[in-house]
Image (cartoon, rainbow, N blue to C red; front, side):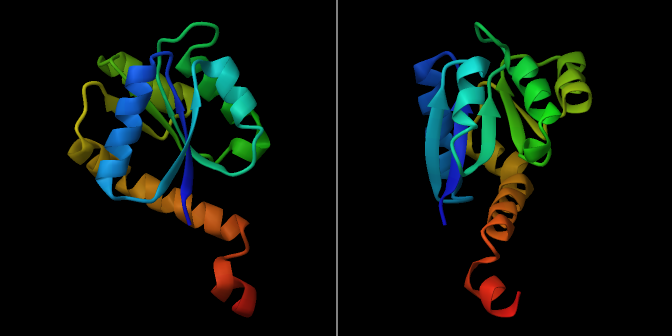
Amino acid sequence: MALKALVVDDSKVMRMMVMSGLRKTGLAEFEFVEAEDGVQALEKLKEPGVGIAFVDWNMPNMTGLDFVKEVRKQPEFKTLPLVMVTSEKTMGKMEQALNEAGADAYICKPFTPEEMQQKLDKIVANAIARLSKEAGGGLLGRIFG
């Protein structure tokens, strides 16, 4: 099962770097959906199957932080894994994203696939388990569920 990942960044180059890095982690088979800002990303979330989102902080129209806050207000996305991928490196910004807004992880740019793998191992595994559960647990879930 491919994990559908929403990659939100106003820079096409950075979206490509995030997608390339995720592929290199080997954590999952990813299918990607892209958005240029938080407003567009909220629209993309209406499409079925998004299992995880990687969000830049500084974007026009709606920042990544505002996107995370908005997503967390919606009951159907309370458990959607949200990962900030940003150049904002201060402890205050990290605390704001993780504790106040509700992001699940924080990756600083520039990053390596190894850093992504280390920080995202459990989050990606949980996203896959969440999707599997929503899909009825796969074949075994349908047989024994």
